[in-house]
Length: 549
Image (cartoon, rainbow, N blue to C red):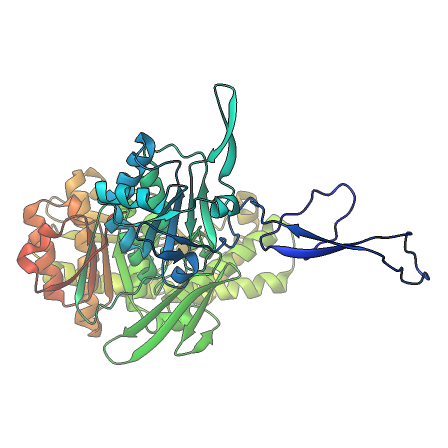
């Protein structure tokens, strides 16, 4: 038998997709090692018919070639590498449930088409009945006629049913979602018609994983309904600046849950002077980076090429959160100006973590401690100087170059170190604090304890005492001033990502934001549900609409 496994006593008889001719030979004795091969007197030809092997997600969908409502044959294979296929099996043309299901797919056909997906309906009805059903309800997709139940058996939907105690064979209402490679990616059995089409469309959206967008050097507005995937595009861009992006997601968390293939993002990136081809991909649950075809050992190479800053809804209260959250916000801004900043901070943080581990496990190795504390000290001094320098530049920009339409912020900063402190001084403090840090379980002295606060200039009150509207405007003002400061002092503009920003602003501030963005002349990516917010600026942005989910 054509099988990859050995059949033994107790196994179920295997199913076969392909009709196979098998010769059964009479055996007159049990064959053992050392026996001569037995003679056979009679041969019997047995035809093993195709059986309806139950399909599972990940299997190849069985091909077919059957007539449709037009009278012409249709094959699944003609869509391979071209289209996803929604293959739905239904009991009978023009019955209430089947009518409702067909009309549901009809009404959403444009949405399915936008995701490279075709709809195919299948039943035992004749070609003529299919043609009448299709014409009556203007169905824009093919209906396959399987009068002999060949295809129904292949897909396991020709089943025994029972009504009033009487058993009969019929079609179990079932839908299969098949990707462009012919793989089954989703199965709905015993379908309940109400809401089914929307559920299928949601799954189709998940397997539509190839996306290309050409923005040239224009600022971009991406519109579409909530949940369509606008933020995903911004997240892909944010990977240029931070290994876990603006959502702080691991490589495995970005993975399309409907695909077994690792994800890849490719960027053609021009920073004003140089053109680079950049690739970021998932490989063994880690991120792989290539620049101009060369694999990079770390993100540090990217920091020298790309600068990205963003404002997303999750950041609305970042300036009201804990000191560590506020400091992370500041660090993101500092990294715009200082390409070595992120590397310095990562070295500092890693050494701090390892030192804490030694203290926690009571490993008293003086040389090891000295080495780690030296790394912390050298990088801490650099971190403090870079933070102070950028804050000075940013405050100057806020005071003298920011939009008068947005409230101005005063930036306050304090540290356990001073700008005059040396690495040697810092290292000695760490050495003195070993016993204290061992008892507290944390590093009590260092730049990780720096404090960054924001005040409203006009009223000289901390941001937590401002209204919710003022808080959001102050945050937006700081982001815009950061971008403008880099343009003024470095003559290079970063990429600015603004996710769902218009929903926070009234008409007056929407206009102010757009005009401020255009005056800065940086490439800005904005997502919004409504293009009408930009009707006065149709020639200032490049617009992309994502179709409904």
